[in-house]
Image (tube, rainbow, N blue to C red):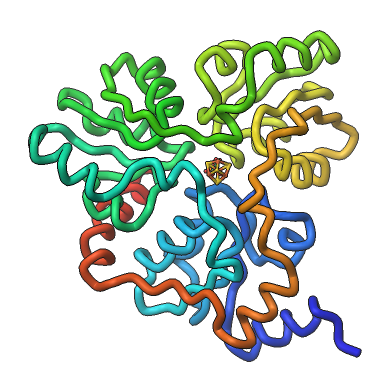
Length: 299
Ligand code: 13P
Ligand code: SF4
């Protein structure tokens, strides 16, 4: 009998499909994927692929971003109900209202946002290029949505007075300074890396701050042998696989359940039956395209 994985490989060839997976997805999904990475890397892969079908294993804003960048391609989300909790914390309507009363303020939008809100943004960013993006609009009033922690971190690093929104990632915001101090006490020699979605007091305890992919690259380049990684636990898979002999500790409660929803079975169903196709109106695609294109041009 043909295994689920084998059937997926056959269908990918037959239909000229590519599988993109975020660093937080399960190991089985990462093993099946053609490209595993952070939000910026996956957006670039989606923009550049020659495939006709993009199967996106991650959360819905990622599939939407792929569709905005490649409107002529079919984008499939094997788990269409896998949403990012933070993306829901800033709506297009709220941004429209903000623009009415603050017409000269540049709206920088974290890619972890809905397509409706991207349409209202001036420029998008990911955790790996947020500093560059905000630097690019230095001298103007800037609002960064929806992540209060990313906004505060970028403001701290650039010295630019960024207006903050009150959104947050429940997974990263849930990591407390007391927990980090506990981890450091248990592993006193560990080098500490953190995602910028963590609270400021947590970032203050870290030796390195960066996106999921940049933490991975930094761990590979480092002479250190032991790390505390303050992000979602799915990152452990690549960290260990690509760093043989090094040891990684995570805050084990930091689990993003929606990032874990895609399974080989749901990928197969999606490829077979076209389940989870991302459909966006022309109006939204056209409105969101410029801010998203600006994002991928600023690496
Ligand atoms: P990265 O862009 O760093 O992969 O982060 C995406 C994300 O959702 C973090 O919670
Ligand atoms: Fe959204 Fe947080 Fe999950 Fe990332 S980890 S997808 S920011 S809820």
